[in-house]
Amino acid sequence: MSKSAERAQNRHKGLPLAALFHLCDDHPMTTLTTHQLSLRGPRASDIDDLFASHSDPHAMVYWSTPPHAATSVTQGLLDPWIIGFRATPH
Image 1 (cartoon, rainbow, N blue to C red):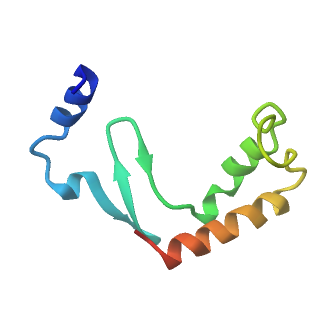
Image 2 (tube, one colour; image 1 turned 30 degrees about the vertical axis):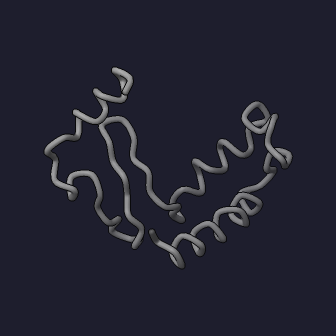
């Protein structure tokens, strides 16, 4: 095991599972939280941040679609994600 993997494993040693996983208030999906990162399912409130990245030509240069010209395009991407994550929360 590498030194960095060992440090990561020891960082969470002894923590109760509830300290690592919890349920979002408005979403039934499990959230994984570490010292530097929080992974959770998509929310309707993510639209502005998602549009900011998906409308940026530099961020979308290697993406399979052109940059989004309107939030309605991004909303069309976000809505199925929300529905999908709610259907299969874990």
